Length: 329
Image (tube, rainbow, N blue to C red):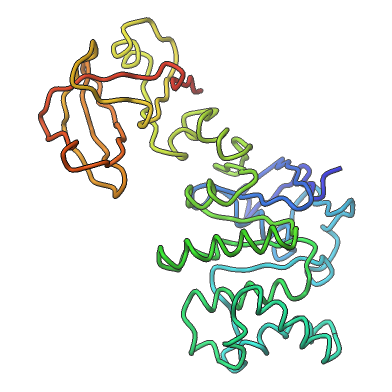
């Protein structure tokens, strides 16, 4: 049986439907990401699970018990927000211990649990500092520790890394994933960043306009998008209509085709002539825009050396892996 089960969930704001008939199942110890553009309903769904936003219909079962009638305090859920929401007049240790104080945990147990969780997030040396003496990444780790110390049955993370710079964000997401695995903690993570979703998740629920469009592991979502939205949101697919695909492939195509940019190979000679229109350096990848048979394509090539760079205007040939052609709705 699933540990978290959302069944026929509905939420409306002033007559506007945020989502309706949301259904999903999450296993114990699983790290699941709700991925999608701003306004798709992912944060609202998370807040409904936490009990911070009331629902208009449906059930949210945690370990077989419906959470909908319960207050947030009785759900046994920990939540970390994008904003740290730390008490500025409390030290790190006092901020982390606050939830235990509300639960009336005795001082000795509280101190022990706070010390353990500060060790998990590598902040034992900062226990006596105040929030204004910490960096953004350290503040976010304090917020995480505050949620972990209460030993929640379910951890919810609402875009906790979006305000941090790229280097800190990468380190912290690795740390969150490591802690989640060590504790075997069932976790739901909200983000609009596809890289975070692909690198952190056991499974991803891709959302758009209040619906779960596709769910599965990272490889499935990336290599087998179910429709145009999924192909456009995950990765940088070339999306071709039937006419363009037929022209490019020199055969009749009746539906939309998605082609991954790394599945197209640039060659000096071959049957499919092309011309480089422009190129961009993305660090370890060079992204080319090429034109072949009147169709513009994006091609990603590993940046092995400057000698391999193809200048704008150069004539080349393309080779397309036929297994990478994906028909999308």
